Length: 179
View: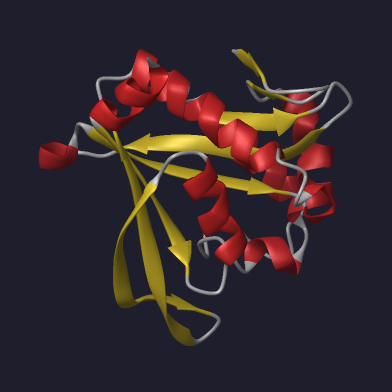
């Protein structure tokens, strides 16, 4: 799968050859502090290889690389929820710090939102943002997500209990803006 963004940027399927570039950008405390503890720090090439093996098993494909023609600089994906939440999906993404504030994350989120609503039986996409990450909130807002709630002290990261901000886009909102 390839979703062109702008200039040389795209969202594409991961390749086994992406491990070194993933580790290069993921091994950054400023990146990992904004992600779940399952995203390790330090982040090694071995961690990247393990991630690539796991993501390649997902059928249908739900995790993708954010990349230029030269290398991967981040990742983005959706996680379809189980049981009574089966028509909802969680969106997650990260980009290497040298590429922040260039519009790449916003473009990637918009492309994956379009792809998700066109290809999956979901009515709700949501993304949680740690309270200390206003840049991620701005990415979601620019992509059309609506701030829905503050989940007080719902996250424990680095021994701190922090709030998570919940952003949501419903299929009907996406359809209205896609017309």
